[in-house]
Structure formats: structure tokens, C-alpha cells
Image (cartoon, rainbow, N blue to C red):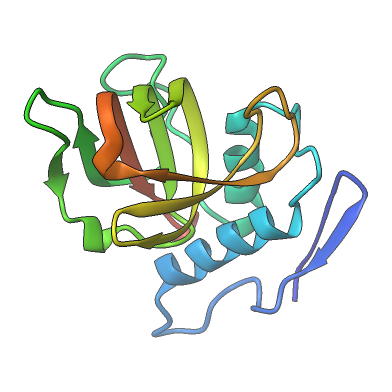
Length: 173
């Protein structure tokens, strides 16, 4: 078992550090990312920036860190394997990929995204749940709060920008 200490919080992972043979390593990593984010609700992770939560969750989960260079611009972060792209169009949100492929523990990267009253110029969050287009998030640096909070958006309300969903990649895959 692995113990991770972060901001004075000791977490004991229920899963062994190295998954047994035949175990879905990607699923284990996603579970660990989500567990880390949930365990830190109400706490500041790293520097309190939105990306800090994802950086520390990936590290605690045994996943590869974010890519050094972003896509489509260097400012846009890449957190693993692209699962889904949701883009605003005049006809409404357009999806490249399948919404059903997004799972809790994936990382959402927003760019100039406007969803109803919410606007995310550049934002990162951990997917907590997804049901009927409702996206539950664990995130920080929202509304001036530099600690982990629960949030939610509706993907059908995307009227500008895009959201990319990334699947964390196990460090030793």
C-alpha cells in the first residue's frame, strides 16, 4: 500500500502501488485521481491554481504528468490521451468522440468556454461524474476560491470555446 502526504493530509490508497497483472491500469489510475481530488475537498492543493489539482492528482495516482507542450497552442494543457472534444458552433455544441467514453477521474481542459453564466478562459478540472450531459467536477480556483470544490456544468450550454477530456496514462504502461 502507498501513503501519500499532501498539504498535511495523509492518504492511504486502498489499491496496491502497482496493480496486479491483468488489471486495467488506466481504470486504476482514474480511480486514484478521483480519490485524491475527493480527499482534498475544502483543501488547497499545491499552489491553489486549477491545474495544481490535476498535477498533484496525477502524481499521486502514478500517472504521467501533463505534456510539456500544449495543443492546439502551447498554453492549452494536455493531460493524457484525448477522449472527447466538445466545441461550440453556431448550431450548438459539436462532439468529436463519444460522450459515453468520458469517465470519472478523467481531466477536463477548458479554453474560452462559456456555459450559460459560467466562463472559463483557461481552466482545468477533474471529472467527478457525468450523467445526461451534466458534468460534475472537482476543481479549484473557481470564484476566487483557491481550494478544491465541487462544481457542475451542462455541456449542452456550451456557447463559446471548447472542452477537451483527457484520460490519464499510467506512468508505467
